Every structure is written in C-alpha cells, then in structure tokens.
Length: 193
Image 1: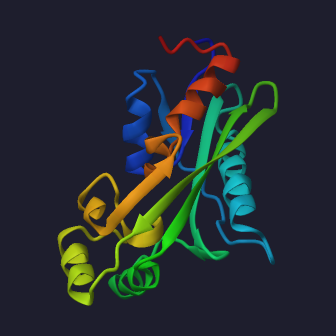
Image 2 (image 1 turned 90 degrees about the vertical axis):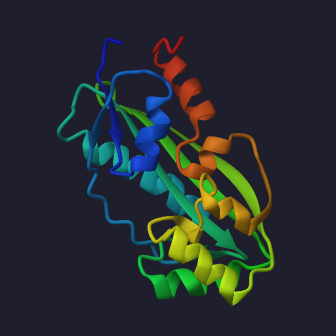
C-alpha cells in the first residue's frame, strides 16, 4: 500500500474485524459528536457519522486512507443506540423483544490525499425472540452489552436472543461491513489478496 490505512474508531470490535484482512493499519480516535440532527433519518445519521469520523481523523493523517463506520439500530423509525447502563439495556431489550430490528451500518473510505469519500450503507435485519425479564437479566449479567447498539452482541451470547438474521455481510452486524470495505479498498488500488 502506498498510503497508510487508518481505522477511525476506538471500537475493539471494528479493530478485530479489520485485522481479519491482514492489512497493516493504525487506529485513530475520531472524536465526533454523534448527536442526531433534527429530523435526521436513522440511515442518514449512520452515513453522515461514518464520513464525519473518517474526515475527523484526517486532521492528523492527511495522506491516509481512512475508514469510518457507524451503526444505528431502528424499529419503526426509532433509533436504539448504545445503552450505556444496565437499566437502559434492559429497557432496550424489552422494547426489541419479538420485533425485527434494522441494524444499519454506514461505511466510509476517505482518501485524505485526494479528498475523495466513498460512502455505503449495509442493512442487517435481526429478529429478536420474545424475551422474558429473567432471560434479559441473565443475558446482561453474563454479557453486559452496554456499548452495543440494540444491547445485544450477535457474535457472543446475544445470539441466544435472536430468531434470525438477514443481510449481505455478517460482519456488518458487528460494526464493519468487510465485503463492502474490500470493494472500496480495491477501488483505491489496495491489494487485499
């Protein structure tokens, strides 16, 4: 690669996913305000934030290819973000019980050298089982998913909360759609294989 590759994220999940490609990269904290704009649609929010994170990291990496990503979980237009606390996670899982949730992941590959940004969105539909209060408490006690949109980690014990998943890239649900990212990297002449 002729340009350094930067992951504009502090998420350990995104870092683990990017490591699968075997490309050298460094991590940068994008320090981006993730507050939705007034009347901003959930998908527009994820796309905007993925690009904003990539562009924010460019200040310290002006010659790099920078990856930004953001995810929102939505049901009927309502956004379910990272709960942050046990109480909010319980409330989220109660609200999502028996419902199908759209986990929409925004992805941006920003070439800081050319000021070119390519943005994509990947949806994963996740159907939650009907969950009892004891299942929710048992799950969160064993896997406190307070930093995950929707309060469930499908790559861990959270899989037991689900009926089904439907999407083009299983990595998108964890937070970094690798199929789309590989395509964007190839467009920037990055040899993955």
